[in-house]
Amino acid sequence: MRVIAGKAKSRKLRSVPGPGTRPITDRAKSALFSILGEDMQDATFLDLFAGTGQVGIEALSRGAAHAVFVEQGEAALRTIHQNLSLTGLQAEADVRKADVFQYLGRPTAAFDFIYVAPPQYRGLWKQTLTLLDRQTEWLAEDGWIIVQIHPVEFEELPLENLTLFDQRQYGSVMLCFYARPVASEALN
Image (cartoon, rainbow, N blue to C red; front, top):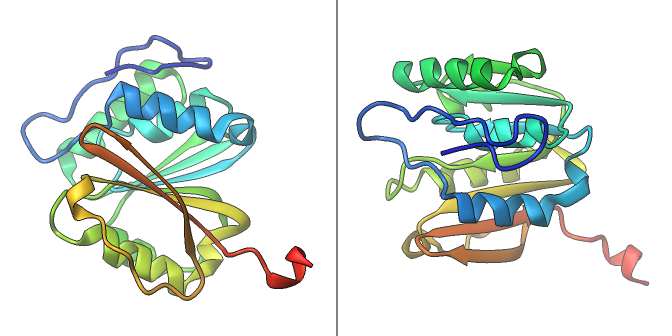
């Protein structure tokens, strides 16, 4: 596991000891950041269920102005801090020890990108996305929510304020991209 590009390129990252986290593959992470491209410059990034922190760290390495990592596991929190130290990206990072659902219960400033990668097969991605759909103040007007799941977990959700606009699969990793729907007036 490593940083693929940017100011911390090629730095090796630590894994969370034991089972319980499922880091994104380099292939899927590389594809994700190719999609995000230049939009990462000066962006704000929220990494929910952060695990090793590697997705938020990649965002910082590629030019994001600030990243918030939300994680509640002690081993994962230690790993995020170690990985931020290894990459020298601590100044742009804010690591929060919190349950994601409690964290999302507080008001905040909007983020350009929200990354959701919870433990598999528990439906936590659906709960998180449904909550973010009700609390759109978390997402910048033109922001994106990216959900990382195993393909067998995917199902359409009845969302009111967000829409699925893209979906990509890289082996056992599926990335689902959500945003606010384009206003019908903008289409005319």
